[in-house]
Image (tube, rainbow, N blue to C red; front, side, top):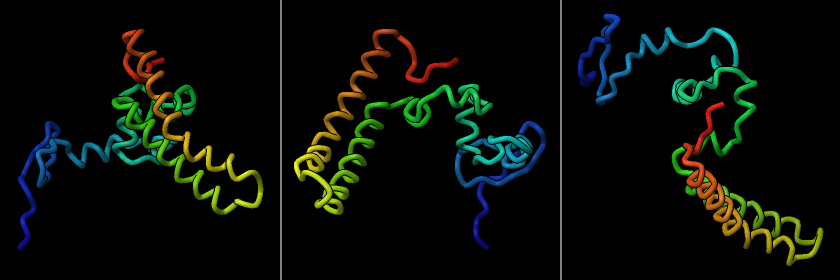
Length: 139
């Protein structure tokens, strides 16, 4: 018989088994799920992240950029990843659409995507270091 994990009991009296050190009760998490609204469509990790930053409506979510939501702890890493994606997509576009315009233009986009993304990440870090604020700004 496979091992279920360690038997745990939450503060509300629910019994559950976990194979990790995670103290989260699955029953309590299921009860916290909203019945309607956009948060009801998200998985627990995504929903909990938004709720941690007090983002519980579409209007509040619209006030943030993608980078502020996805990479609040490490914006430089996120910027470089976006630069790599930009390089790959630009290179694919340069090959596929080689006859649609100047070749140098398409390949220039591929070459400068990572340095420009790095510069954007650096400017973002400098802006928030100067203001002493967290990377994600609460409204």
